[in-house]
Length: 383
Image (tube, rainbow, N blue to C red):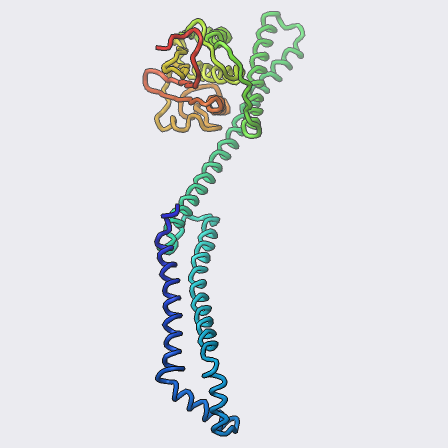
């Protein structure tokens, strides 16, 4: 930083040197020309004549007054003259310095302005100009991203509000049907009850996503770390998804050591794995298999892979896959109608653990990989 403003420092140094030099030159010129030099006699004669004519003094009295005021106080006059010239030059220098502050002030006004015009400063403030333009670009980009995110959030709230009406209408319709037909056959009653229950479950999911929208923005995700077995967690998760997998004709293969200990927040990481498996089921091809593999690619790193076969994620969608309120339904065939928070929340939890969540997709499969930092893990070889 100290070498960034060398042009400004050089210019200010030269100004100071110039002020000192000009003060010395002007003072010396006044002394030599006016008091001791060429203009000494004309100045003295002019002063005597002025006293005689304007003040009606005699010649001797005028000469005595000249001696008293000028010849006897030459050093004091020179000192006063030097001080006056120095103050004059310092004022000139300060005026030049304040010009830089005025330029910076105008630049700060431009920083707050909502326009695309770049900030332009003088050559000596080129470093300040670069930094202020960088800050302005950052603020403009953040504002644009915030507006886009707010727009996505508003759109998704509208989507969810619309989606809630559909299952709610079904629930109300089937309940009214059951109420209006008490003698309905048992099989038909069971069928209507099952549909109403299914739609009520869907309604509960959508309401939960509404709460996620607010919780994700308004509260942090505190971690309560404890040792637990990730292999056991992944197998239990696969068992919990069995009814959904059975309905789609899908299956899950879990490849992991019998005991894979990790110290982290088990509840938060369970949500990460649940969101990733739910995503794999939602976008996987019916009848295909989903692979979950947990291993240790490096000595102090744990890797958990979720891989499914299905429609690929377009390349232009991958950089935004973990943004809040981004729905994959816009780019991939699906029927989840989610709020676009599952992957964003999963990414947030993984990053809170000091890890990363990566996504890859091609014509063969889509892969989400959780990488978590860790120490030596029990039940796993360190090759």
